[in-house]
Image (cartoon, rainbow, N blue to C red):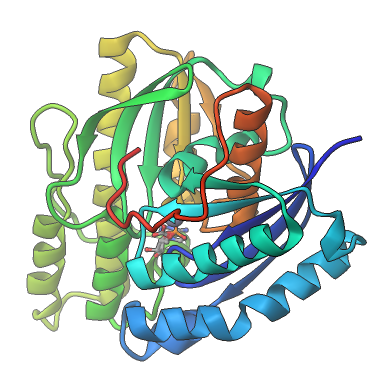
Length: 327
Ligand code: KG4
Ligand code: ZN
């Protein structure tokens, strides 16, 4: 009999709960707080943690109902311990610990960024995950590139300023295109027939990224009334994505690795997907769109495959949030 995992993700502005049977996701419910943070143009941590504690129990009840099981059927809990916002992580952790105590079942602490790295494989057996791969994580909190070897990751580059998701959100705010900026700009990109307004592509040494120069460039260009905002958004996306593709190509060549894994909210981007699919002789591993953003299914899946492969031990009830945890 396969075991049931209840997974909890509250690292930022999504309250997400999932039930897995073995490595299969049988239900997933995510309550996005986007509309509550929209008017501020970004996530307000205090509002986020209040909303998590307000809705998390209803979401747990609905997810269990949808899975067709009872609370008592759950065999283990997986929870995001970090990185993320300390107050929001704490909500998920306290709920996880309480359930673990009441149901007398183990609790497993999962790294959010690592879970994004495994999100393309949800539902697949651990044997089907490449042992060596280049891993690109692109989200609102992270822009980093690592080399995966078995179950470990060696980070080789990261952003020196804004993350790419942050740049999308800030640029969309400057251009009055709405929040979150990624989906808004991505949609506009395909509706503009011209190439858009050309923007410079940052190319830091090695594998590091930078997005603040591009953001300032867009800001300056937006002050000139002659520049159409949609063409500017298109130029921004071309430059932002090109920077990622340059680094991925460099890593493929220098490290002689054929497997490329991409995860995080920005991995939903249509231009990024198109450009990476054009790379020759590369095995590209992309998450299904439903698993690109923050979700508890990836947390439960990583716990399940790691436990199965003897890579994860239960945590104690002293488990604490680690907001700056590294991959
Ligand atoms: O992984 P995620 O849901 O949350 C974090 O862990 O940060 O990523 C959210 C980010 C936001 O900045 C959002 O604008 C961006 O992902 N995003 C996109 C797209 N969809 C979401 N960026 C570019 N293109 C998209 N299609
Ligand atoms: Zn994330």
